[in-house]
Length: 150
Image 1 (cartoon, rainbow, N blue to C red):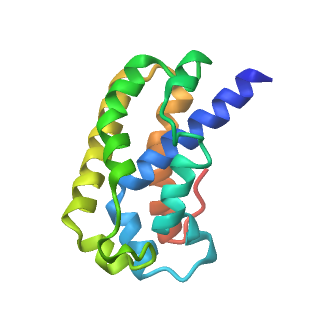
Image 2 (cartoon, rainbow, N blue to C red):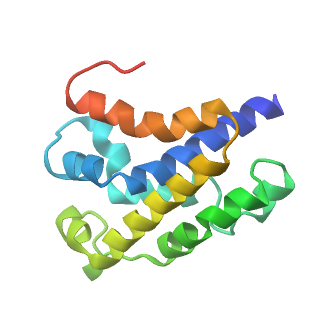
């Protein structure tokens, strides 16, 4: 049972980071797509899925102590976590995706998320974890083309 909880939590964690890293999908969902499924890509949802759904508002300590993550994994995402925690959209409107998408701080955060994803790919050993990092982006590319992804 705990193993399945860990797998699900890790999948959600990796997906959250990959979604912040994926600027092309953000642009698509924020400005092109009118699909209700695209709500997961809205800024408030990106923020909530990472900090609230994963219970990361107090950091990673509990997840390391319960063997959900290794210290090495936390170290490679530390800069992303800190930047995301401090990020606030200009003007304070979390739904103003145009302003967010042009914000240099957001662009820097997305770049930091990409760096974290690349670093994670170098240390992850579970093939499922690796597939998750690749799969989030591939699944979204396929959905934008109307292709079913498996």
